[in-house]
Image 1 (cartoon, rainbow, N blue to C red):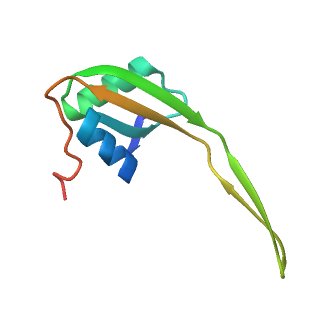
Image 2 (spheres, rainbow, N blue to C red):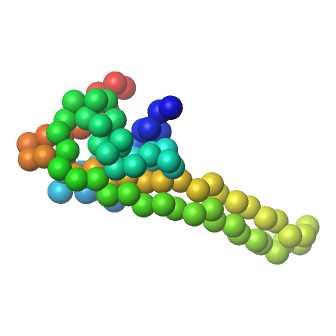
Length: 96
């Protein structure tokens, strides 16, 4: 079971990483903070101060169009924000 699914690279997450040394990841829904901490430490070789997690529910949307009702659904996921120790950083673009 892979705990880290993918890093979140958005404007807000990139700004947090540059200013506050915080990085965001989409993680497995069943993973707890200790498992997330050890997975990030092993994957990137950094030391971590804290981990914050957020559960996002399923979003359902309905649109009424000329051709009828269109329904859409986005999946649920868990997001983790990892605060690294002073002087540590993660480079997501080194493998490109």
